[in-house]
Length: 180
Image (cartoon, rainbow, N blue to C red):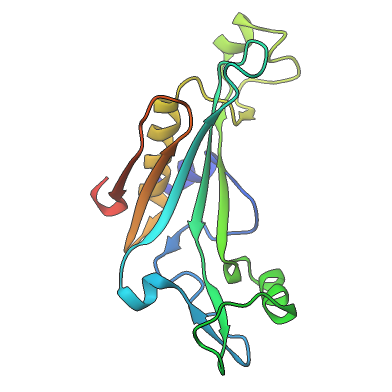
C-alpha cells in the first residue's frame, strides 16, 4: 500500500501530516515548557495502539468491527518543574495551532463500500454509493490487516504497533512497525 492508498483508509481526527516520523511533535516550542515523553528518555519506540471493537451481540444484526488508532503524542512540563505533566492555556493554544502538540493523535480506519455490498443489502447501504467510505469492517482480521498496511505507509522510524482486540477473538499483539 502506498501513502495515497493509506490516507484513503484513514479518517484523521485533525489535520495530521501524511507521514508520522518518530520525532513528530518534538519540534514544537512553548515558552516556559519542555517536551516530555517516556520514549524520549528511554529511546524506546513510540506506540501506535490499534483498538479493534465491535457492536456484535449488542446491536440488532450488527456484525461489523471497527479500528481506531491512537498514536503516542507529546506532553509538556513547566521548565521549573520537569517531573510533572501539565495541561494549561498555553498547551491548549499550541494544540489549536498544531495538532502534533497533543498528548495523543487519533485516526479512524475506513474502507470503501463495494457494489456487491450495496446489491446484497440495499437497506443497510441505503444512501451509499460504490466507493463511499465506511468504518464498518466484516472481521477483526480485516481491521488488523488494513491497520498494518496503514502503519507501514504512514509511520517512519522507531514505532511499535500494539493491537488491543476487544472483539473477543484474542488477537492482541505488539510488533515493531519496521518489521511489518
